[in-house]
Image 1 (tube, rainbow, N blue to C red):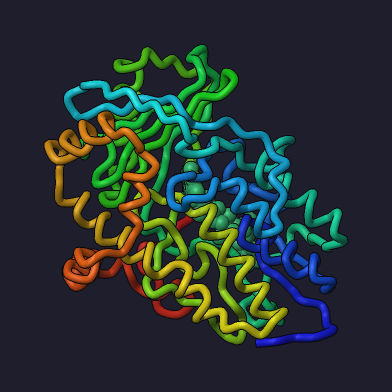
Image 2: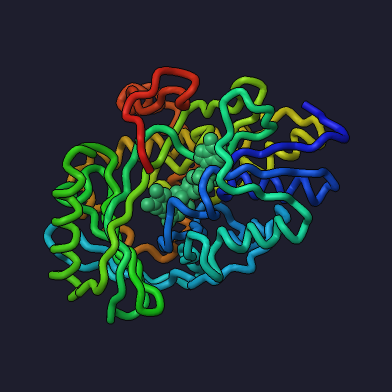
Length: 369
Ligand SMILES: Cc1cc2nc3c(=O)[nH]c(=O)nc-3n(C[C@H](O)[C@H](O)[C@H](O)COP(=O)(O)OP(=O)(O)OC[C@H]3O[C@@H](n4cnc5c(N)ncnc54)[C@H](O)[C@@H]3O)c2cc1C
């Protein structure tokens, strides 16, 4: 699809929508972004998140800059953390290359969202807040985020005396088929249980997660504020609907294994914009970029889900003794003969979680994040 001259409308001012808008504006196009909420990053409200740095050989921040996305946000390289198994055994994680860059989401100073907004505005992009785009609106790129809850992350934001670092617990009793995490940066913390099933008992898992971090690391939360959200995964991602190109989680582009969707969102936004500019086939390009890693990650997600606590313990021992953790994680996203062999099983096991994005079918497990 190639368009010339007219204004391009983008729905959603998340990483996917703003990356798309920035790419279009850098090529000289007039862009209007429509955001349903009053600010950028409103659904995250000071959440700490990580821009993962394991899936590519190139550094994640370098990759963003190579896409034309400035990295003028605050970040803390994630090089020092601890993992715990269901028996409370602690495995130190030390890496030379940062495993991820810890960033803040939301409208405040130094956040990823504010940096993207600042870059967009400097390029002359008009961002209209409090405008919810109707399904029939003439939108070029729809980047309105997840509609279905296929993973749920829920917990608290708070202040804490703990030192900077990250902590992860792999225990089905706290986070069924997922993981619980604690991120601390400059006296503030985010604690979440990330569930891949049994969402109905999320409150129980949050309570167990708080208790576990109190016991394991001496966490004391001050001024805790509840926070949660959903993640949507789709395979094959649905890239088009009603004449729009879908980007980010709206299309189902997500990291099946751990839910690190920011890089998928930004890259898919850039690819969608390039397809409007240059007439490249978005479906083909985005499938070439994402299908291999998403399939490999889905197979590994299903393998992980059948491991259970003893299996997680085995995996954590390997992680702790790995000489190059980024490289060993990267392998989990690289399609191999095993991917193709196990693909029918993984797809069958994932079942309804792999339906089309909401709007293309009747949405089950509709989220509120
Ligand atoms: C609790 C939690 C923790 C996470 N942690 C990480 C992490 O550590 N690392 C990582 O990489 N990923 C993480 N993710 C996933 C990551 O946040 C998402 O993958 C990413 O934000 C998706 O970007 P997006 O632009 O597709 O969607 P969003 O960020 O959801 O942006 C979509 C925007 O569209 C707006 N919108 C919605 N409907 C409309 C409409 N009709 N009209 C106009 N605007 C609309 C929304 O208000 C929103 O601002 C986490 C997710 C959650 C929920």
